[in-house]
Image 1 (tube, one colour):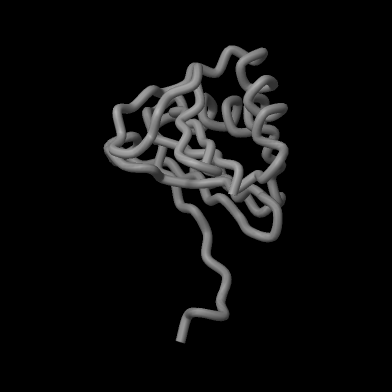
Image 2 (cartoon, helix red, strand yellow):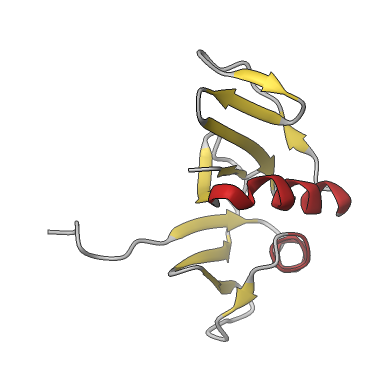
Length: 125
């Protein structure tokens, strides 16, 4: 039923101005132009990331969105580091840490948080 339909990441934030600065300036996402003061819709590859204002912003304790960036992971991580984006470090079963990267076999990934604490993941898959 939904297997051939597109899906979107939907991320609740408390402060839209702070979120807009992060998602646009730090992550490089571009608005689709279909925005309101409480909602920003960003184009990300062939998908969208919906960021909206909510009193519950940042309360999710799990990953909110994942980007599989393939071989571009290392340069993207260096760019985020240069922009001052801090990386999260987790003790996860089967994964080892190499600097900010979490590694398991061919898998390599990082986690970051937006200003409200929403967890975002980038990996080489």
